[in-house]
Length: 226
Image 1 (cartoon, helix red, strand yellow):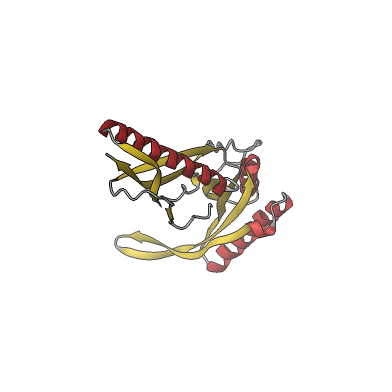
Image 2: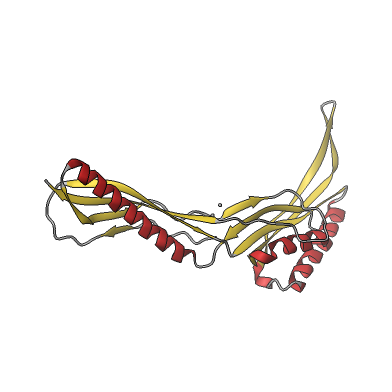
């Protein structure tokens, strides 16, 4: 199984003193698997009532309960933020007639930088204190650029190996220092774990993060002589 900050697409020129115009262009791919270290959880409270004020008051109370429980569990205040708040009008339709049924208030929170081992217990705690919607859990890794650099190195090795194979098959002499290297892709985004509503339980929900796969792809141009 991939927030990380994306790197800008970049081109990497390589110094080469060879002036031979015979060129060979290949793609390379590097993959690194790593165990995630933290998660970002999106959950919240959805309430309905026949009046806006009743739905909103209930939602405010439950949301405050959820936030207080998270703070009490040691989640820093700056790691909790509102990512969605809306009020929807609900209608019933019968015999082509629209009738006002009530109002729905939705308040979704995002809890970031949750240690992997605490993910299940944080979700359960929020549910036990009023959260009734858990929409996603994204698994991430600290210092992703370190793993991406390794994937990039592997991509270059892969491209060089391919160029060497092609050159050997053609019977030409490959200059293994590439003339030019173009980065084709960024590292992979965080792996999402889509969830349904969590039920209350005595033990933490068994969230399984698996592994993240960080991928780098390049295009390398080599010169060769006949």
